[in-house]
Length: 459
Image (cartoon, rainbow, N blue to C red; front, side):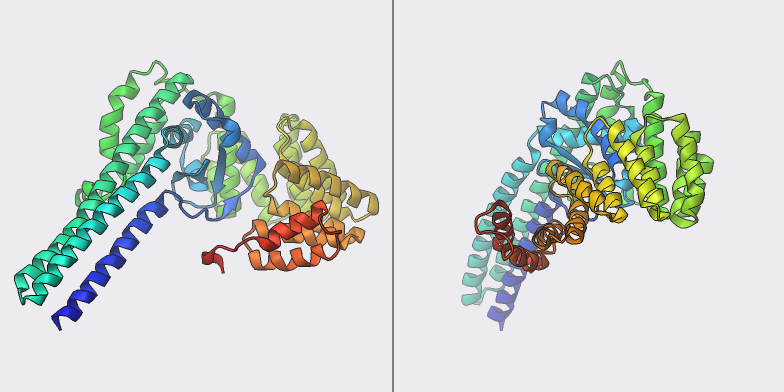
């Protein structure tokens, strides 16, 4: 009986250990969640991040800032990507607060913290396995000799090894968080920006946990407590010559417009109106009301509202993009194509999402000339942004209406592939292969999709 109980105990601790390290390593590459694609907000985040990346010595062209649809205030790094929640932008009242968050995450990138954390996890796992083997051996030997105290001692050794490994790893993570905070202050000073936003964020976090902070064991969490981060940073931050520097008014307006857009799309007309009534930016207020009007009421009545905004800022490509979206919902494909064309002309960054919107409008126009132009626009957009699943959807529509079934099947396979529907992607890839000459570029791409090994978690 004792041996059965001992075996169950050992199995339980092995399972617990596996879960512990899976959870800790998973925290470094959190689930991507629902990704939000928006040209205006992506450009804003890129403008926030680019100077910081340069100051940190990180290549901007190999780093991507990705927006996640979540109301929580959070950001994290996975690979060469910085993920930031929509809630972070909404809750941050100034650009400087978001810039501080990005500076911290770039500190992780520049410091190679992910790679080092993986090494620490391997080390902790080795320690844990060693103590488990020693503890199990001691417990089994004691059990064989009828020594109940020895069984307990061996079990205690297993438990102590797990706890020591966990605490060691969490201590390491807290150290890296502190290093990233200090690096963030350095990058902000190098770029002539205030570290005050970083402190503001920590103070908000501290207030949010004020009722439970006394019950949190600081040695069992992966981040230092906000009050400890404030204590470590405040004197350093206040020495910065840029501590009291304000964000440029134009950047503050762009930030408030991004907040307006997220709130209107995510939280509905009441939240949009509430934001509009409270914001100091009249432009952001009108933006929130315009988007709410077209999404939840009448797209046609939103047209004069967006036209008023364009009249006051005629060089803003994203206002024309919004007009294109409004025209699409109003059923005016030609008007949408005109608006997206103007947006693409004004855009200096080659934003693929603007060309994708134009391609969509051209597909809906439906005549052969528009469809052929749509294919061209969408092919260019996808060459710039090969993971744009919506672009492949519209491209499949264009090819299908032009009678090019093979290209339509291949585009559909790509769409399914980049949305994680791998089984469907393989079905359409197989269909596409039958319509192209063997070893042609299209056949080879379809073959790549068909041969792709689906991750076990998605089977």
